Image 1: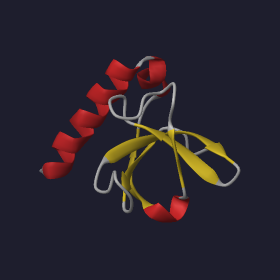
Image 2: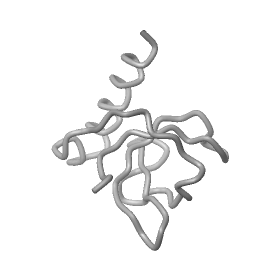
Image 3: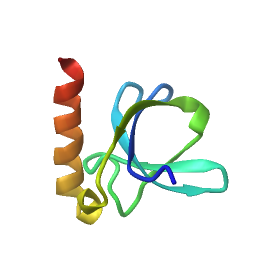
Image 4: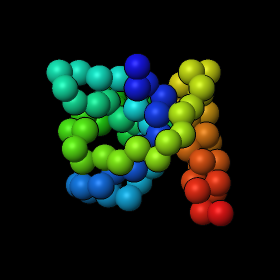
Length: 81
């Protein structure tokens, strides 16, 4: 199961942004970041247009948008160092 993985968008309007995989539908991934793309309305994206960074989020982070946004921000800080 790939739910919880952190990815970077490689194409589209959200290029370069960190997103979390929240599900799958018909060969596409459902992505959310808690701010622009909420958990209630995730972005449907082709897996070819994303890049995995090798980190995963715990399932308790997906309780609400605020906790998801906070977790992604912490991953972004770790990624810079």
